[in-house]
Image 1 (cartoon, helix red, strand yellow):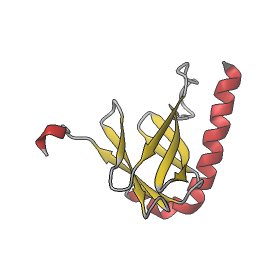
Image 2 (cartoon, helix red, strand yellow):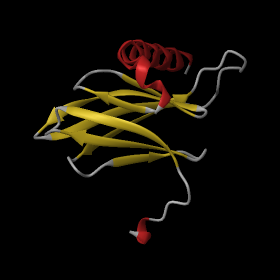
Image 3 (cartoon, helix red, strand yellow):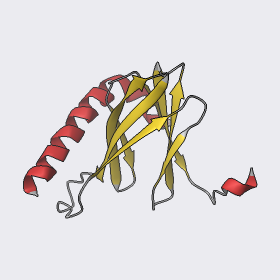
Image 4 (tube, one colour):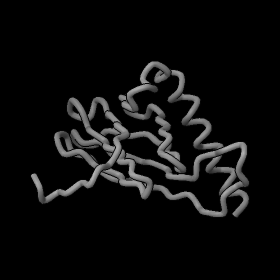
Length: 130
């Protein structure tokens, strides 16, 4: 269990270093655009998402690890991390919803040449209202 937590922390830290190098200017609006296999790290309240995407038949294959965010003033969490894999079609965004009122939307762009991740505040979302 301890090894799994350390491995998760190392993976998230590595993804964060890669992502932070290219996205310092985008921090204000919570929108990140990445190329295939480029790491991405998103803070979403008490959780962090770290991952990447690859191309497959004009679609984006997204791999994300969801874990408790590291905080210096807090003891390590006993909660385990989770890996989410999904295929995102162009013009059909995928969404990950949090319990803290945040929503992360992933958009596959330009025939899977890039992916945009947007962190949004969720306000009474109703899919039937479209």
